[in-house]
Image (cartoon, rainbow, N blue to C red; front, side, top):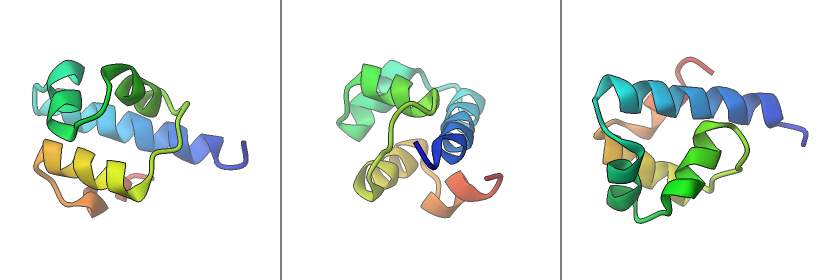
Length: 72
């Protein structure tokens, strides 16, 4: 996968923000209307989330989507 490294960094950033806000994967997944296992794959850098999913995750974390990419 050409962008595997980028997906990994994106996933780590999502995980970092989620943990800093003390939100469980289960709760975030429910708020984002995605399966917890898919969120886990995103956080592990194993998935290529769509823009819509990233918007849902940002909303679930109560942040601007741009914040997901600041450290990438």
